[in-house]
Amino acid sequence: QQQVKQSPQSLIVQKGGISIINCAYENTAFDYFPWYQQFPGKGPALLIAIRPDVSEKKEGRFTISFNKSAKQFSLHIMDSQPGDSATYFCAADKSSGTALIFGKGTTLSVSS
Amino acid sequence: GAVVSQHPSRVICKSGTSVKIECRSLDFQATTMFWYRQFPKQSLMLMATSNEGSKATYEQGVEKDKFLINHASLTLSTLTVTSAHPEDSSFYICSARAQNRDGYEQYFGPGTRLTVT
Image (cartoon, rainbow over the protein chains, first blue to last red):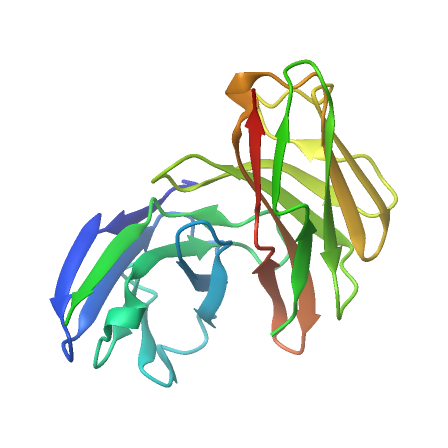
């Protein structure tokens, strides 16, 4: 019930391509779904987050798609760049609740 | 976005000594802060939830007498690793919850690399 399953574990995309990372959750009480980007040796940086009252949120090249009925959400990185090479974590939480539950992470490599 | 700082960024200590790590919310007040531990190429593992003015809530399997957490003000939480041993070597990251009009966002510090020799 508390898990967030993330896939793929690793991803290689060519420069200019679209990177897609998927996450699925089980707890229907979750109502906050952020994505974090982490570079080696650094803390995670909040990239974009969505709440279930909308099905999509876009910020620059980053888009979250949210499917409440399927209990899935995904991150799309358009026009992927070598500087996007990092580990991405999805997470979920209840607004009134405790700490974020994290997926296991996806290592993205964008080849130039 | 909101900024969370951590100090020190790196620390090396001898086995048996104690180390204190500070986590500060720089431009917002945080009633709730979290401490995570991260092993190489792994996800973040929640250690404890720190609430201002009250005792921390530890996750199962985390020794509260070993990892002392104090949240004395709305902008500062500290993690003290007592009697450190080599197996405590890890990357420790704090985060703080910032309220906004939609609810909240959670921001992370830059992390502290602890090496116990």
